[in-house]
Length: 111
Length: 114
Image (cartoon, rainbow over all chains, first blue to last red):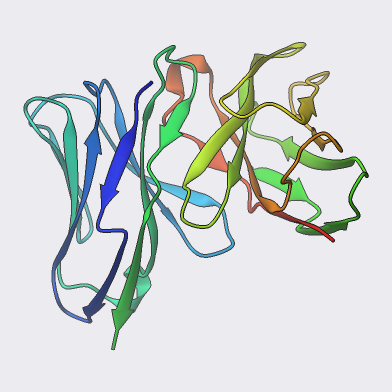
């Protein structure tokens, strides 16, 4: 079965610093999704990537899917306290009927 | 405002009791999902439904049951057969089965077994 591995597991950065979170799949990705979760709340959809080499940006968050479609990175520029939370990557399951998720990366931003 | 409503937000249960978590959506979405989240474990799929009166088991369906009698409702019952039910439960929906990645999530229900 497909598995998604995220790294790092947790991250503490100083406000204003850049950071990168990685998501690696055991199989080729046909759809890669990034979500953000605040502790104890639901997930908020950030971005979807489908094509190899695709890159999307939203405000100060940029996500990229590599050419081989097995790894994605999420980059935050000039981090702010509002960026703190859990970032999860998701991908279509083998049947294409639901999403599977990585274990998440917990981001803390210190001011 | 359109969205997904989960209730209750917090629930305590004694061992051996069944409990039902409610999930209602007014987005007119066809597909609905239940996930379980444990600390450091990400989200694991329990059940999903792509259409009314039909649902499928996910990766960890044992000890859970669902129904989908109405398009807007997808309740989850945690039965006494679930050996470790303490967790955070998330309900989600998508427009239809072709848009499984763009999920809309509820705020979650935290179940604690005493």
